[in-house]
Length: 229
Image 1: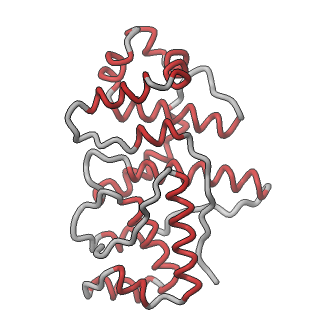
Image 2 (image 1 turned 60 degrees about the horizontal axis):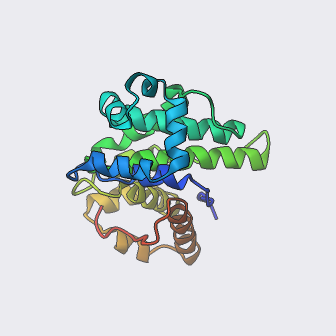
Image 3 (image 1 turned 120 degrees about the vertical axis):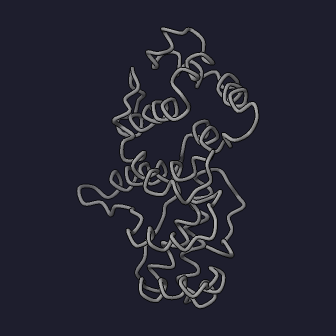
């Protein structure tokens, strides 16, 4: 059976919770500060690795000055380096998250504003690839989202709050049905649950296993299939 298999990856819970915040909510800065200040190790990590902190001496002022995206990217870079080297670096380095940022930009027009779900999926894939590389040696099987998914997403009726799940579901449908069939079905307005029903049992099981693995990795238990793209 062709396709791709997603592993469970132990993502840093404190970072994942920050990335799942809805930035469109009122008092979002208070929510961010609460999650950071309520986690002493995270708070200390930021104080000791963000050079901007030495200038402001206040977390709220630093985040406001950097902006959410820059702060998020710098914080993520610490965890990427830790996954690569086994320890946190002394300073942030946004170059470490360039691929994740590019991944987010690739899908940003399909996700609802205020959410970092494409970024979250990019983080998962980056850490999953590191895990696969460490386990398989010199010739790892890289986990990537097929380029054809970009075309399938153009049939989305609305921006998706959980665009990460939509991307994964379309990736599975592509592997199971092929690009020509899936493209034709979406152009005809077929719903995803209709396409799921025609999958062979092995592909259904693979999709379910992969969505559960991803959902467990980002600490979510309410995985579901979208009814409409």
